[in-house]
Amino acid sequence: MDHVDLRPGTRVNVVLPDGDPDVAYEAAVRSVSHDAVRLTMPRREGEFLPVGAGEEVTLFASVQGQVYRIATRVRLVEVSPAEGLVVEPPAEAEKSERRSYYRLITRIVPTYIAVVGRDGSETPLLDTTILDLSGGGMQMQSLSQPDPGTRLRVVFGLHGDPVEMDTCVEVLCVRAPVRGGRYHRVHGRFVDLPRADVERLIRYVTRQQIEMRRKGRL
Image 1: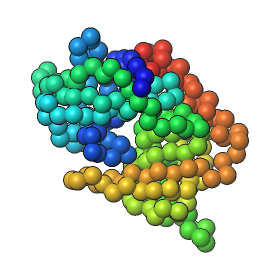
Image 2 (image 1 turned 60 degrees about the vertical axis):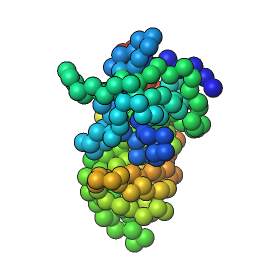
Image 3 (image 1 turned 90 degrees about the vertical axis):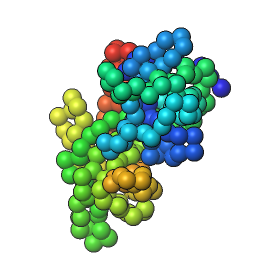
Image 4 (image 1 turned 135 degrees about the horizontal axis):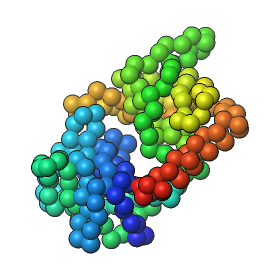
């Protein structure tokens, strides 16, 4: 187990102890004191995390390229002056996963995204957003439900880079929408991505890390 310092602005995913981290609710750290951590109200697709005071929750936070799992408990659900959660300050965190590339939590709407058929035809996906990105792949939310094993053509821009990425992504798995939700979670990896484009992505993610650290968010 490790000690992890959460800082204001750090983005976290929040789930109930028996929940699926791939369908987590997103929040940000508002403030940290010796006896409490205040979060914005975790939400997903416009819905708040259904949780009350006294319930346990699990936070997932990316710190210096490593994802940590942090168990804590809700002390208070705030409604004024803004919705939010007050949770107990975590003392320890468990490393959740090891990755070849750092995963950057983001929100990028692709310029174009479609399922590529065996005959080369392309069928656009509906209302899709990239939720996280690395040099190895991406996670998206989409109204469409592509089948695992299918390939997608994904064209998207990177802030500060004038040339769009035009990539092939293999769908690894698809998570159904949470109760009451509409969006599927789509996990994919890049296929035959040129080394130059991998390096572009790594440079982009590194720039974002530097900017987040400068703002005290990482």
